[in-house]
Length: 588
Image 1 (cartoon, rainbow, N blue to C red):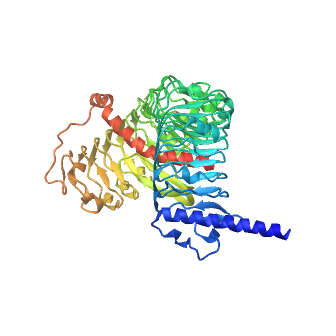
Image 2: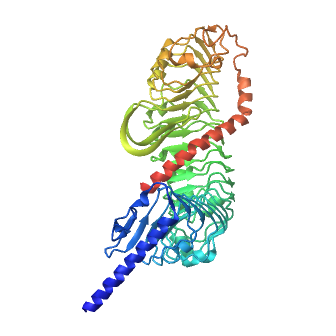
């Protein structure tokens, strides 16, 4: 017995020595800019106290976590001869060369491999020994070519695969033997995605094939998918009908394709758990079905830039969890349903570039969570509402606040809790409508405004002195109206203002000389008879007559360039917002 114990101790020492030798070979092969691997030296009897090394109770190396160490050089010719290694993470470095097949050749029990965010290139060998892999992340490299089908067939234990942001092409297939539940193929050049069995389809929970060249039908039979991301592909026709078998779907994004046809009336019957419906920039037609109100969990509806027509269904007001509704750039008619005042959770309302008309509902002042409102480029008439959104101290989660001066967007990135006094909407765009009458003094109570655009309407009367109370305003555009009188001196108190346009009104008198007003170009003030002072060098006489109703009709009919610009701005904001939606979906 004593001899057996001694022999086992000898084997352990030999194994530990082999682990140490393997790590030294790795250390000598890479360039260690951060000097982290300096701790890998012979002064210690075991590598278990080395930086980035984790050992088992028996002293065997089971994990190497060497991410974000600025390691560089190629991994070609290096072999990790480690029978015990379970986890290898060398992500977020500067490693180059081809896929390190030889590096992994003698790691039969490796379950987790992360090579993401390096500069590796070339193709993936079908000889890769991945039978024990459960997690594989090769994202954000420069890999090319096809994924060998034989490789996917043999990697039967893989549950999580991320190949995003490479240059892979061809077909990606899943088979009977696969147990994959999370698959990310986004940002490649795949042309086909195939699931060869109902069994493989049932295992998938999250699938992201964004930004590829995917076309054709995707699924056979039932699927347990909760998240399906397919934006920016080459999908055509009635793909919406082909996803109705995914009855557990919560997130569905089909944006930036060429989908046509109508939105299925049975969508909510088939997908009762749906929380996020995104299909903007397609060619969807017909009306918005009132049956969408049956998706009681919906928090996001983004159907902008399609060819939807008819009225906005008032039944949507039943969606008490809805916080983002975007129907911009369609062919919608009629008015905003009065029942929208019942949307208690709505934060973003985008209805721009349609043919909507009537008064802007006063009930929008009851939407205590409303932060962003874009009703521009329609035919709304009547007065500018006294306020939109109402006083409330709300608890938000925030990492940062992103505000773009040219966008109708303020993006709140969710993180730690904080309390914020919000007295109104933060972004309000009512430009290019038929609004008339005076701007009410109560507009100054909307003190949370960051951007307000009332341009290209028929507003008259003076600029309210109370606008000087908008102490958070960054962008203010009231140009192309019939406003008269002087520019209130209170506007000099707006220290956050970096974009102002009061041009082409009937303003007169001296431009107040103080604060941010002295920083703007003459174009901010031109076209106002009788207005003078810096930056104007002389009295500007309006070279343009007031906009007539006939001109306004021509203006709305010929605004293709404005729509294109609006689409680009929408894209910028949407990228950030999608991150938020996905983040919230994963961790909710």
